[in-house]
Length: 451
Image (cartoon, rainbow, N blue to C red):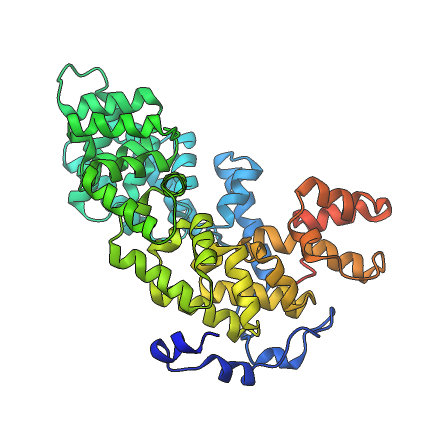
């Protein structure tokens, strides 16, 4: 089914992969078959163990709570993005920020936005940027107020970019009562009154298109977006503003006609546009190429349209990425029909990195014992976080199996797609005698069973 597209764009053929990969569907629950070693790589001896990672995260959480007074929930969130087992570097970061006058609540906001600062050299990541702002006339009070409100400034690269961004933020946060009636100040005021948050206003201000610097075109664009019902607090509102501001009415009509030729009705084009406004930004060549690539993968024209309606971002996905996704599924042992089922049921899988898909399938099939066809029938699970979502639930399931409290593996949909409260009701609360232990496993207070 896929050979025609892959023969011309890849050096390997899918049927060769199928011959190399041992079937995974008969794997037993407690341990993976040795055959699993062919499609899946195993951790090396130098890799940190789950226990090592758990200790680092625990150390990080306690440090953040004790040093900054963060809530356990926020500290947990930060520890999942950056963790450490020594306080030397994070102490240096906090000392530096305090030396510039930042209060602990302001530091908490900065660290929550950029947890990586805790594990990087503060001299290179922070001091140089803060010092440069001061050299360019920013007062200490301005730096602490503006940077703490918009920590994104510290993520900018290049001195010109940092100071320019700082000036924009200063204009929005401190000059709201400025009597100058420039297009920019007037338009920013309009967007603010509509409810557009600061972080989205900043992106508009520093964009090359500068839609907030226009007048008639800006007003017309905003009117169209508001009439279509876009939420001003969402990024889609800003994306739609870019599209209407940058493209002429004639160009937009032409893009709509392209989708009509591909089988969409006008209403379907605009309903899909509301899901992802950049739908209309791509060239006719790119749009038609994406449709062609999906068809060559084995989807019918109707199925291609359904995929685009569900996941319009796929229009901007490269041909190589789409084909690569199909390759990954088949390389892992899914049949051609199962690979298509995955794409049709959860097109977002097209955008997943191959190593991410690989690690999740390895765990769900090799460790938990679900069959490949189970994953293919519920592909949304491939989009879930392995560490934050899949592992806590599977830890509970494995504990129940090891204790003999359930006789067989539950359906993957029951274990991984049911709402949290339903999962707890079905797999934790009904086993009252071990419920406290299961809760501890679910929340990660004890060592993982599933890894």
